[in-house]
Image (tube, rainbow, N blue to C red):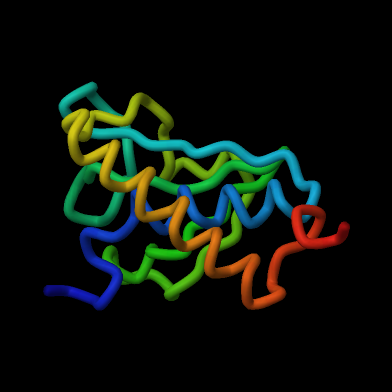
Length: 120
């Protein structure tokens, strides 16, 4: 493994998206894969399948270290290293990721970390 975050970009990005939304920030899950052409993350050794979060004119990537970058990258949405396509993961893996993130969000909110969801 290159980093501890390798292989976790999908669920990490989905969790970050939900945390940002809980804080009232419009964010969406973004992904891409080189099977779609020049999509995903462009590292020095080529394009890689990857997932990150887009919020307005910004990208937040909490697993960029797997490509030799800083652990967390916040950059402009037009950063040429990122090209959004579709989530090409198999449906069963998408379902597992979604279930895991629902469980993580429930734990996050229960610990008092949630924003608007926990504000009542």
